[in-house]
Length: 438
Image (spheres, rainbow, N blue to C red):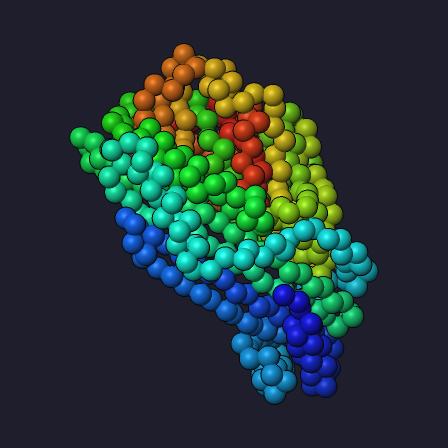
């Protein structure tokens, strides 16, 4: 795959914008293709191929802007999209903060981040892998008697972002995954759990056999779950769910929430938000990582930076628009953060359990009970009860509640069992106490 056709389409769009009298313009062009297969109880349930192309253009007439899009990259269709955007822009209200990111912030270096590793796989091979994965789970224990299926997906694509500063950034990338969800029965009904892996390079994926077996193990561990006694307990968020905590933190320091004054972390720059041992930072140029990029959605060069140092908030998460609204400088986060990394301590998961002694491990959260304006946090959950530093039995149908401000400051340790399968890299997180409602 190469992006030559996408680059040509971007150039046409920018030329058309100039001819329409736009004072500035930016365009994003993308093409993606992929294969997804799911198998349930040994039968093929879904088989999907996709091939998608799109172009989105934004034109600026002074401080007025408008956007239009098309899935047709023929010159005439691109011209029509630009004309449509130009007509709209002449009727939109001027916004002092609208416009391209500053020209001197554009990326000028584009290192090879090894993001593109196509997988030579067809539907037949994908079906075999998914079937093997599901069967490996069934083979673990006869109590695994049902399945929500195993799935294999492989996607690759190219994207070009260009603007009238003369910037042209081009990326190609791939993403492959394998997942399995299994069901077992006990006296209380059905329990389900899953496991998965995801990687830029299919060679880095765990085997189908291992994923199926891990899904079965996770499911079996949830059998004969008990309910909780209401109270206040220490809580460990397992590495698989801990990224959600830091996702809430990032939401609270995003530019949009800040300039709308709709976050509990308003005006917290240079203030203590986490304990002193906490270090949270971005690593946007890690090789093969799922969140890597050399430039953001505005074309601004990414760079490694600290967000939390010694527990203190060092910077917000800003694109060029929100930065102008706040009279600050963009942090190259148009489109989000890149490989958010929470440094871990010396304890593995077993070590965290031992140090906690008595409390709860949360392995799943449910619901939308988080209020970024106030920081109030309430989620349905499932997991395990811990005594004497050892998991005793599974628990479900309980609610965990607190305030994010207290949760962040109440972090006791971050485990070294780091989950690498996403854009947030963290181990399990031990919080001193939360309210538990059974």
